[in-house]
Image 1 (cartoon, helix red, strand yellow):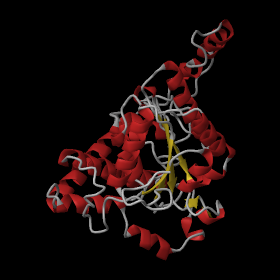
Image 2 (cartoon, helix red, strand yellow):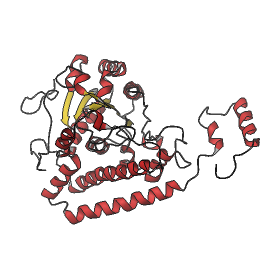
Image 3 (tube, one colour):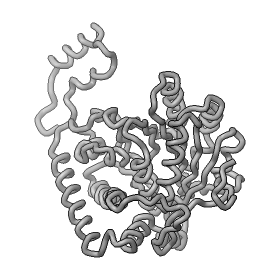
Image 4 (cartoon, one colour):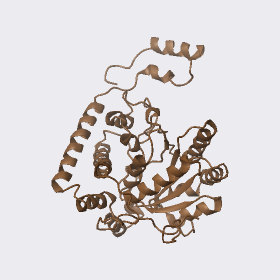
Length: 371
């Protein structure tokens, strides 16, 4: 069973680095260099600014749907920085921005929401399902949980091939009530696969509270039954998440097997632009968690260590707004995917019957201009 240096069981406690005032506990601080801390803040702030803009576009009718990560930025960004680019990411709804940290172009990332010809997925998936082979990130499913055994399966394949990559699978607290969770946890433990499974416990599986999902004292403690180490980390503390994920990834890469991490956080916004959270939770609860905002906490830490001041924070926001505005302008001008792309990615070599259908489509009538 994993314990901290003080003997505290990490699946029942709460691993932290940053205190509420932004100061760091020297016993747990990963001691990241200032440029890395600044990048972490910038990437988290980028998520916050970008998603505010995208919700605005959805309300204006310019995109159909968007799922935000407001209040949960620490986990995906810290994970992105704690993993190698060769590692595979199997996200749920709120981890897509790992792609951006890995260098995926912002305009092509946003093109997935618009489903136009810049979208590498060719408009075939609903918005907020970003993925790209170029950055080893797999598309998630709106069905709850299937990415968990997929991540374990990819890790099993890597082990069989002697590949040094690690698979990271994400889920929400609601997914721990799905059969896929239990199958994946058992398989990961029995076969000691190089995998890290991360649950973002944001307290709400859409409108169902965590207390209705489980009677366990924590979600992390569930790992014990499968023979896995479980760690419960403050998901609003980017440095703590980084340290926990980094340790788990290194353990997996060294042949130590899988780890289950519960990132204890909160979804400050709606589940998606299709949701009204005022129908099932109180404003007082939201305000309590807003005081623990992960972006604000990291900014306070940067201020304390002399890496950022008010002027610097304003400059970061100005640069991000300009970058995001430019990307949106580019993406909104793009046309839909070409009709021929309907026949792409079906087979490695297009069979004769699909080739005939493609030619028939090419000869067929076209919609009037503007439709």
